[in-house]
Image (tube, rainbow over all chains, first blue to last red; front, side):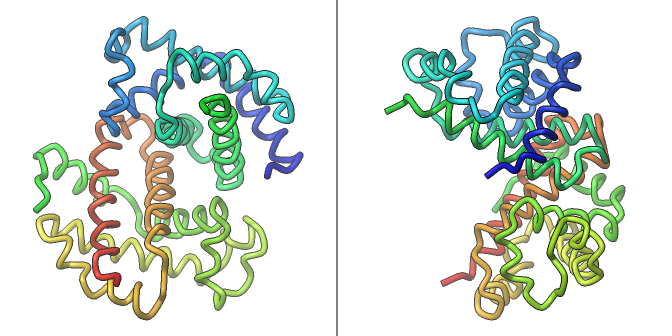
Length: 141
Length: 147
């Protein structure tokens, strides 16, 4: 459950990260590929090496979607409908992977924000990423 | 037996030689109690855990956080025999403290994030993978004696 204060904090953090969306997104993905090699199987059609245009553009997409969702968290189901459909019928990524990427996103945020990624921010962000992942998987079955 | 590459061994030794146990330990435990509030169930005797500020400033939390890091050092010094190193601690957590072993992973994740904040860009994906592998072995060893 996200309090109003937490929702504002989350929106504020993502707003500040939009200019570095590529960097953060690519970092989170690279961490996931290094720590959880099974996740790479979904990217066999792309070049996901460090610095590759595919990786950067994909990372950017993910962060921008997270930022967009954070602008009105109560409307996540509406905002994410197109992404829900894509993930359920086209991408069909096993939802366990959402947890893996969420964890790596938290680590990426921690590396980037250092002491600014307080325990309170971490808690709020973890809850947001869980909610986001749950909505994304809603149309799976 | 766990196989460690040279990179993994060096990475673990390096991280633990650089972090301050009495900073990282308390920060990781406090973070766990804030991010996963149900873990507070094991710390009923610790006094005020009412909000994030109280948890962060709680001297018992700090002391215990440091104790945990010192406990981790035993694995750092015995990377080839972590299971046996933690046999007694595993029994303690199971028989006396009655801690659900799922909690070990929660603390491990918080520790990863605290270390990430300490090391910044030096905490690369490869370093993270080595650190997480180490913690996974620790978590497994601590859960080993549960029955």
